[in-house]
Figure 1 (cartoon, one colour):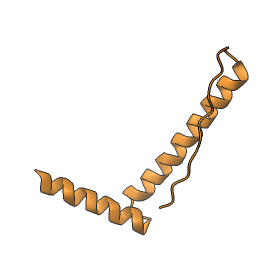
Figure 2 (cartoon, rainbow, N blue to C red):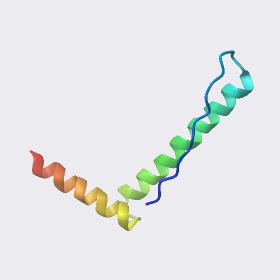
Figure 3 (cartoon, helix red, strand yellow):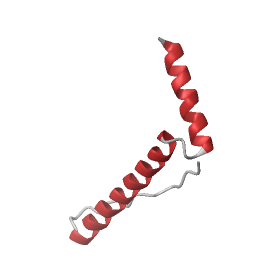
Figure 4 (cartoon, rainbow, N blue to C red):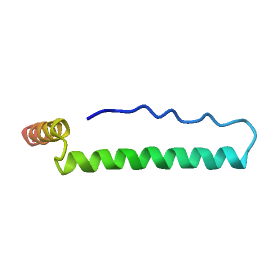
Length: 64
């Protein structure tokens, strides 16, 4: 599973409609990307993500 860095824009002191729209769109895109990565790991479509999810489940069960 590859991780991508998505830098978030830094807001200006004064309110700007265009900047607000850009920030909203950027945050939405980043969240959608992470949601897709989580779905891939949950469905075990990605081998590395699948192994990490199984390890997490195993450790979680052993902790109780």
